[in-house]
Length: 373
Image 1 (tube, helix red, strand yellow):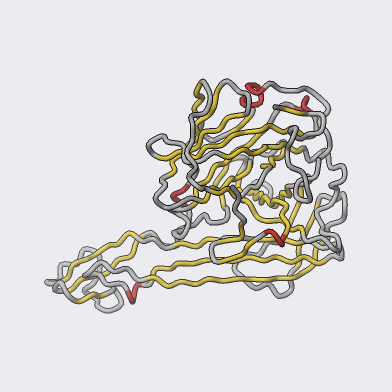
Image 2 (image 1 turned 60 degrees about the vertical axis):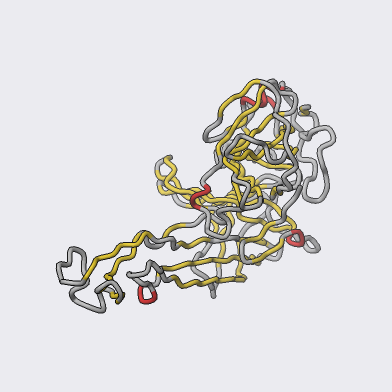
C-alpha cells in the first residue's frame, strides 16, 4: 500500500504528532521499488514473505511514523526494548506488498552504556526515493526483531515517511508557540571531516574514558599502585612484585538532550550525562576487583536564540551554562518533524532532533523515551 497523493499511507495515523505533511505530487512506486530505496549500512535480500513471529512483548520508541529527510544520509534510529534474555542480533524488514524482505544486522550495540546493553537494540534506517515522488512519500513496513537463532521475537507495523526540507508548507518554523508543548528530542549526531564520517553520537551510546588500568600485586596479597611504591612499574623485577593490567569498562554517555525554542526568543535545553570512571585507589590488583566512581548529571539551561520563521540559522546563547556539553546552535535544516543543526566546515557536525510532545516523554536515569507496542 503506497500513496503519494497525501504523503501518507491509507489508514496511516494522524494527530498532533503526525499532521499530514505537504502532498507528494509525482510518481507512485511499487512495493518492490520502494524497498530498493530503503537504506541500511548492511542488508541481505531474501525472497518471499516474512516468517511467522511470536509475540515477545517487545516495545519500540516510535509509535507510528518514522521520519527521514531528503538529502541527508543520517536516517533514523529505531530503538527496541526487550528482555535481557532475548538476544536480538538483527531485524527482518519488509515493505507491505513486496515480494522480498531484508535482513539487517543489529547496529552498534557494543557501544551502548551498561544499563542498556542487554535490553535495547538499534535499527538504523534511511529512505530516499527519487525526487519524482514529490515533497513527501510514505511506505508501510513490517519489522521483526530476530534472535541469534533466526527466530522472529515480535512484529511491528510502522510507516516510514520521507520529508523534503525544500517543502516546508505549514512548517516554516522550529519554535514552540504559546499553548503548545512540542520540543526537539536529540536522536543522533555525526561528525564528518571532508565528507568522511569520523564518529557518531546518540542517546545511550558510550565513549570509553580509559582503556586499561595497571598496578601491582605484592606477595600475592597486597595491592599497590605506581604511586604507592617506586618498585611498582611495568617490567618490574623486584621480588614479590607482579605487574597487573586490567581491561576497563568505564565510559561517558549522554542519555538525552531536549531543546525547546520559544516564540519569545528564549531557548531551554534539558540534558544529562552519565560517567563511570576508573578509580585506581579502590582497585585491588590481587583479587581482580576494579574500582569505579559514578557521576550522574542532570541539567536545565535557559538562554536566548536568534531563529526567525523561515530562517536557516538558530544560534544559542547561555550566559550561565551548567553541564559538560554546550550546544551553541548553528545552521538549521528542518521539516515538519525533524530539525538538523549543523556547524563547522571541513570538520562538520550534524545533530538530528525529532519533534515530540514534552508531555509524552518520560525522563529518567536511562534517558527520555516512551515505548510502544
